[in-house]
Image 1 (tube, rainbow, N blue to C red):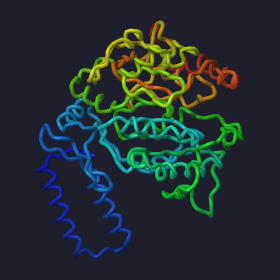
Image 2: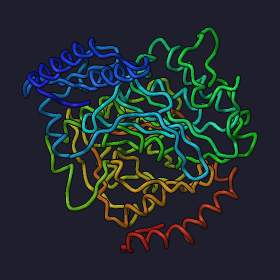
Image 3: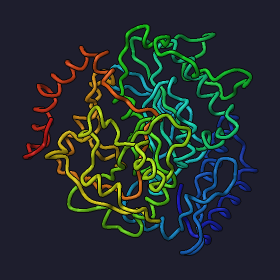
Image 4: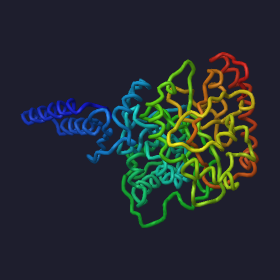
Length: 456
């Protein structure tokens, strides 16, 4: 998606009309050549965002020809962000890739809308199909591009595709946003390749239709009934995280999890902050933008803004995420002050922290860029500590943790009281701990150099 002036748009449209007139006299050698040209022409028209003057709203032309504003930001605000981030756009093209032992179908099911690199923030999430019940709530609150990487080995592949089709067509209150904003990537282990149906290639296996007269394929599924669990396969969470992040069209990405629900209106507030405060974009040190994370008891209403969150914190219905399991993993500097500070209309930086001292094991959830260190794909969800190597690398690189004042994330309702996961997968946890200290730590120090206070 590109920003162009009204005059430039008129010239562009005029040029296309001349091309179309010329084509009337061309003898196409094959139908496929004509179809290829038509697709290119259609993609180009769909890739135009228009703004007229400094104070008018930016407009997005989607695949249906509808024109909508981009997060209610003005063209002038978007230009300021564009100049500040200095990024390059990319198209979301389907391709088959390999990440170690895993085969990846990138952009397997694409969102109908696309965004320029400076125009939004992409929420990126790892998952399998059993977690897709979280997607409607997530999309409703995020209101921007979402990139989801789904692990689908063996027979899970077919159920995953059915689940994608269901969620794109059968949820009356949210399927439009899901079709418009969510791109799905699917991957599987090379030793657990899904079976073909009717000799149909796997790359053509997805059908974007669904008969919505039954329950969602991802509902009421016990994890033990999945192909992955039946074959004792670990969940390669960092393969999924990197797949979703690197496939994003936008410069800024929110590397999160599918069970994390952001405060509402985050994207327009974040983008406006960048346009007003370009000093928050670039500095002498690399930086990320941290959203504090909380958890709440079982409830139908998840706080949408800081004022609602504060009300639940005061009554004990909300608390720091994993407060009873690993508070130091998620506590931000000056947490009590952050919780008491009144909400304001705009988003800004509350304070700047470092992953050292009492925050040396900080597992921050943050908005960063695709230039940040990748997650180490040797670590699994079961083994825990799968974000620690990236956090250590960012400490070695002296990252600034820019903590935002009025934005936050809430984990899917339900408070954990003990480390069930650690007990269930004790062998994998011990293996990960040993590899972090004996392999990953010396490797990263060799790559980036050592820095006092960094911990792994």
